[in-house]
Image (cartoon, rainbow, N blue to C red; front, top):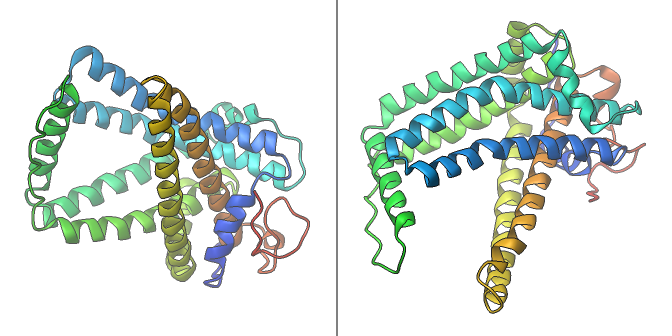
Length: 315
């Protein structure tokens, strides 16, 4: 058996360990995570530039989004695996640098990482198609209308009455509920399976099976972790929105462009924090469910510590 069942309390511990990850070697872990966070912004920046330069319509925007998503299916498994390798080295006291994450691109494991990413991407696309076909009657047309109206609003140069957004179709409620359910489950499969390929040395299909089984065997801690992550994320975004509002109001008294100049660094810091917690929680989940037995003890301390209470969060 390559997967283990852990208690519901591990859901909280995974989030705590995600917050605490990198204390053993913050330069390496935070640096590698920052590289991924910045690279993840590249598709959005390119899409924004293309929109401003060429005035893309809604259909072209969707096609561009699909193209960047396909690229991310191939590239992201390598980037995430690289960060997991840096975290694993830091947690075990091995020397590590931020750029060590790129070693997976030239290693013999790169093909398996890409294969796992393509497999999960195909599963995501097939599930999305099935859900939209079954419950999403009219959702695609509604989304395209909203996208077109949003594009018209952003193109307006002066004050004008914003057009009314169309009401969402009746089936969007069940569709969103099922999308959240499968999203959480597949995210767990991805975290465990990718960890098995990157750190456990498992072949693609065996890692995929480990991910499916590990996620099913640990539903309770996954639900706890997802609930805490959603609540914490909402609170963090609310606090961020309040800070941005205050900065924007004060900065606008000096110069309209000053607000953007001050808010951008805060946004990048927030993005980095979210990525650090996400990758740290992924590593902790893999370690508890599939990692070596000596790293998966139920009373193991948070990553980067030599022992102590798992419920303590240190920033």
